[in-house]
Image (cartoon, rainbow, N blue to C red; front, side, top):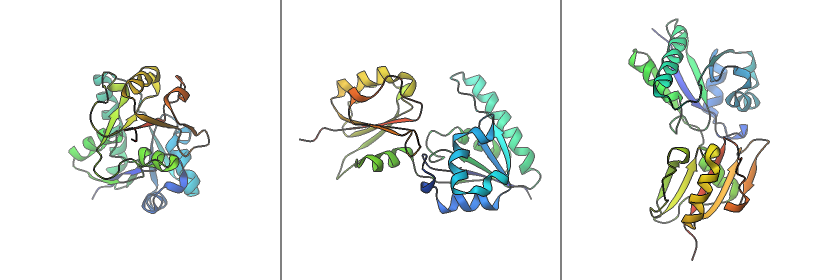
Length: 229
């Protein structure tokens, strides 16, 4: 027998948007892993502890996930993370790994889960509300209607993208290159809304491209829609 690794989405920021299943797993599990070097300082912890105060009494395991585009460094970091979590799993302890939004959407956790699964351990994904669904609801913006298409783009990696496919766009990971992203949006002539820090105390909503600051934060999500006729 070995422990099970759960990848649990805590939603985009508002603790009231955490699922009942996420809260239950946190309450029932002693070992909670969090992405960062200081567990209690991570955004995932700060969200979850508001919904589940018992989290503060758990065994918190910080898992370093430095941001880098160096694939070799990424591989080493993911291997180290898997090694760390395997210590608990091998002792027949379940581990809940908290991650923002939904763990299936651009989550670093997935690389760790793959390594754990390859080593023969059981893993389980627990959905959370995605940032783009939360941002759409927060701004009263339908993501798609009737037969519209929806394209989800990691903007910082696709600065050459012209947004020329039919339908609406969600641009994630835009913060570091916001100036360039804004130029792409202007050329597209789409209707734009952006939410920064959705559901958090520092939340800001911008209703057009010109309102968006060039120094917008990391947790900035843009919805770009076909203009209404």
